[in-house]
Length: 154
Image 1: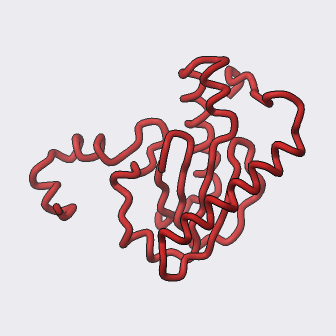
Image 2: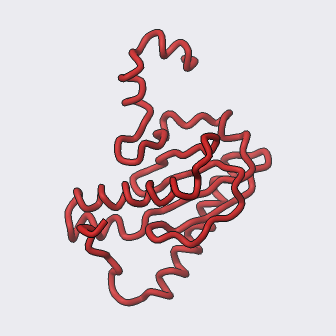
C-alpha cells in the first residue's frame, strides 16, 4: 500500500487531485477516504440526496448533477471547518466526519448521525440506518407525488 507521500512522488499533484477529489462536490472520493483520519472525529454523518434517481430519469443527468452540486454546497454551509472531513461515498450518498453535533433540516438530503467511538464501520452503518428513518419520515410528510423540483432555479 502506498503512503500519501509516496503517491505525491509518483503522481503529479494535479493528477492526484483528480484521482482523489470528486469533480461535482469537491469532496474526497470514497477511494481516498482515510479511515485513520475519519477515526479522529466524534460524529459520522450520512447523507442521501433526495430524489436523485427520479431527477435523472425525468430531467436528465445534467439536472441530477446540479442536484448533487447543490446538496454539496448546502452541506458546506454547515460543515465549514477545515477539519470537517467530507466524502462522496456513492452516487447519491455523502459522508461527513465532524465534531459538530447538530445541523438544521436540509433541503436536498436525508440525514443520519452516529457517534463515533471505536468502530468506524459500525458508526457508518448506524448513521446510514438513521438516514433511512429520516428519508421515510420525509416521504410520509410529503407524500404528494415525486417531489421533484425544477432544478433550473438552483
